[in-house]
Length: 155
Length: 108
Image 1 (cartoon, rainbow over the protein chains, first blue to last red):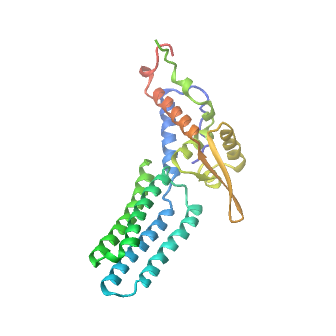
Image 2 (image 1 turned 135 degrees about the vertical axis):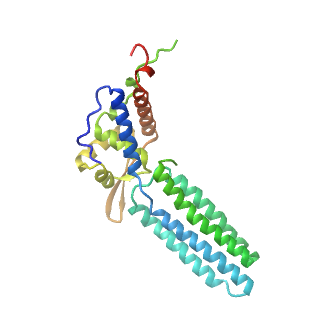
Image 3 (image 1 turned 180 degrees about the vertical axis):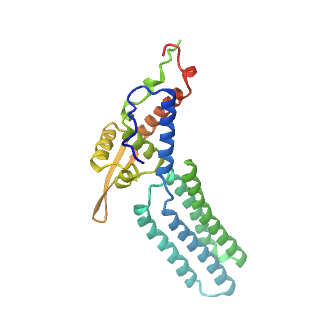
């Protein structure tokens, strides 16, 4: 993105100049953003949710100890949370509106996690798999939303 | 009857410089960007980018946030609300000019 040879825009631009400036602004804006690595941590959070949901459902159905399911799931969640901090620091510039997209997707994750945390004693294996599928859907939807935002430049 | 001014009067003189124009375009497309990332993306030097980002900060158009990542200082740049409004107004004026003479007022 070399800006050294571009013309100074001090004088009133002609229609052609204005179009060129608009094209330049659009190109510079579009290419400035990349996929944020923070979404990798969101995938880890969703993996933790999915593992916990299935694990707790299985423990519920078989009367097994639920502790391993919590440990397995929370490990993924802790990894995701820790990675978020480092990912946001080292990540390339994210498309404008990342906070809004992240907030919506995290709210959806919290809703599903609340179901797992508070209603797991009611889980059948089918319900556990359904909740787990919900987490997997979120794991796809969040990054997909980001990819669309990066490519199209929309929030 | 309201007098319609030529859209050139709506162009923001703060964005006349090509680097400032590109910096504003960059910031308009991102959540925020580190000083180093902006310098590399715009293919410019530290002093030049510093000079122009400071000028835009003084105008209240760009937010310059300094912090530490570990022991390393890091500067992040982003648009302020006023900066986004000013940039959008600038682009709107350019679009009006780009539409050609038919869209301009008669006394232009």
